[in-house]
Length: 133
Image 1 (cartoon, rainbow, N blue to C red):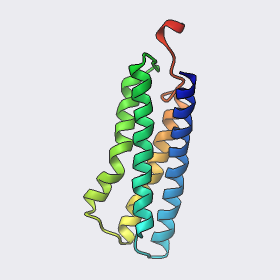
Image 2 (tube, rainbow, N blue to C red):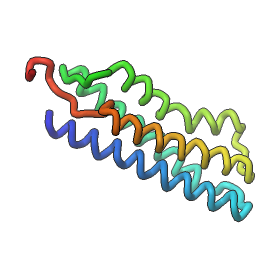
Image 3 (spheres, helix red, strand yellow):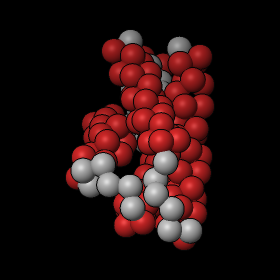
Image 4 (cartoon, rainbow, N blue to C red):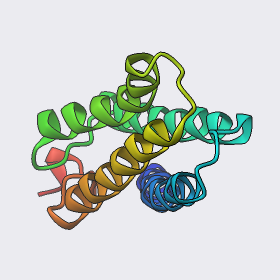
């Protein structure tokens, strides 16, 4: 199960970094008053898949008997990270203007700070067996 802990940690750290990169990219588009490109929409899909994979590994670890201190809070936060980017896309009805880029920048930086907060408060690991205590 140590391998799953490691995989989960790598995926979660990648999500933090990808959120930061997506935020910087969004700010760049908004600053230059550019439309959001297809590449950006692909990155939004990628970060959603990355969050979903991280959550899937967390579910697998939970089903195999591993636990973290506040597992319910973990799953609530992870559900947020999976649905919020597609949710913003839906709320904006696919707009690709400067305002949409600003909205995605704010959300990306918020997701990065939320993920970093989860990490710093120990909500992402290590996952341990209750019997190991």
